[in-house]
Picture 1 (cartoon, rainbow, N blue to C red):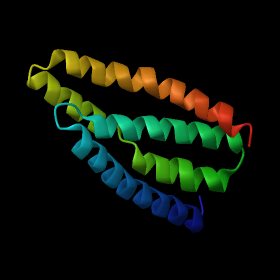
Picture 2 (spheres, rainbow, N blue to C red; picture 1 turned 135 degrees about the vertical axis):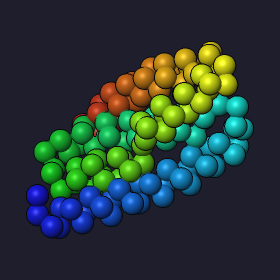
Picture 3 (cartoon, rainbow, N blue to C red; picture 1 turned 180 degrees about the vertical axis):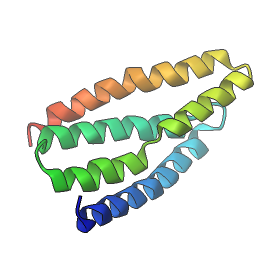
Length: 122
């Protein structure tokens, strides 16, 4: 990888992290703290965005570095999903912890496929 690719990935990741903070915080504020809706929403949006990118430009390396490995990787967060799930388990919120993991997979995979489908039509 050349230096410019590192820089593009870095800028994308930083931007994605800020977007995650803003959008996730906004969703959490609106939906309440009983369930980690903010993380769920950004992860589903990230799956959809990655699907769009893959469907629209599967061979564009620079675009994938900026948007896929950068922006969307900084935007979504598996580690936060796991931590919030653990916190729900520790609070004995078993149904919510189960829905957090199941909902992320059950909604994330279709969002990815939808993004690929729509992206391929651009």
